[in-house]
Amino acid sequence: PNDTAIVRTILAMARQLNLRTVAEGVETPDQLTMLQEMGCHVYQGYLYSPPLKPADFEQLIPIDSQDIET
Image (tube, rainbow, N blue to C red):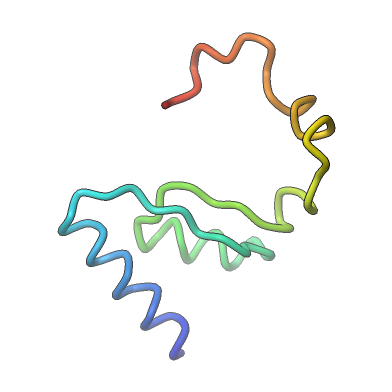
């Protein structure tokens, strides 16, 4: 419950400041759902992939990456 309150507060502050947010350490589908419902924009963590070497990470990026936001 304390972690949830902290996350809600951080996301509320980010909204007020028109900032995009990145949640680190997302490990379960339930965590992802909760973060999505709270308005988080981007996620990373073991739910998607363990840490990778740069060369392995590059293989995950589409060759035609024109659709990627900067």
